[in-house]
Image (tube, rainbow, N blue to C red; front, side):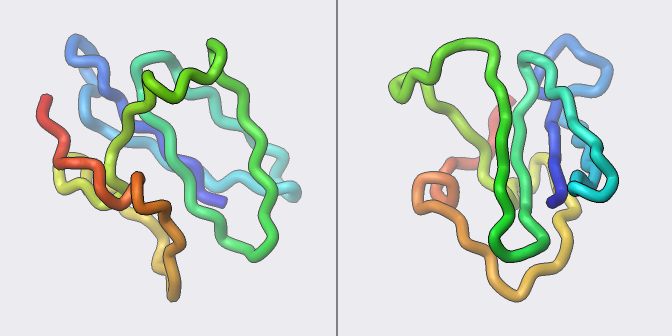
Length: 97
């Protein structure tokens, strides 16, 4: 899978920049995403399992997000014949920050 982190810390020199890396069983890599950064991923193979840890308990009322193709970030996602994205994640408004 391709794992992406976007820096949303307005006081950071890398504000609104993104970083992507490929994670696989073969390469054994992991990605640490600091607090204040957004996280997204795209699987590259069918039946991919994803496991990640978060810094606090999940709270649905605190959910926030970014649209995968928001022009504010222009993430270079790998080409895909099909993208399966939840309606919630397809409908996030453009980033304003």
